[in-house]
Length: 157
Picture 1: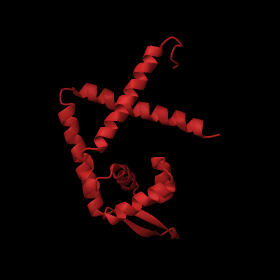
Picture 2: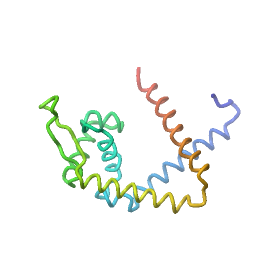
Picture 3: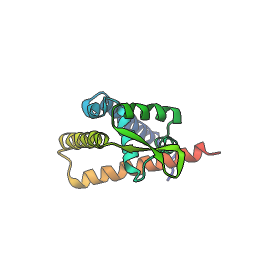
Picture 4: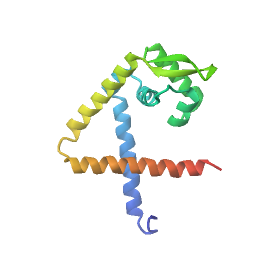
């Protein structure tokens, strides 16, 4: 689909909606959602990514998944280790590398943060019916997937 050239109002609405979503995400970072992970907003994404890898994660893979520089992820991993949320273990396939896994404390912190989000959604979106919530989730996932795919194609020469 391509926006008609004369539909600047729709483009404005899309841009404003995305800007509003980003503002809401900044508000979330300032709230207690992240108290369970040492107050670090980025820690939730890091712990989630590590937790989703059944055999553990490598910093290089996390950086690619989170679309961050490996040095940034490495610093975040060091913080997660210091908080006791992540452990480093020797990679059985490559003894020079380490595999990152969630500790019990990391899993508990991530679960507590997920519970906080569930409470937030129940409270803030309590007047929405299931069909509306399903449509929202589907649309958000489609939006982020399509935008990510498009931007990734632009990054690759």
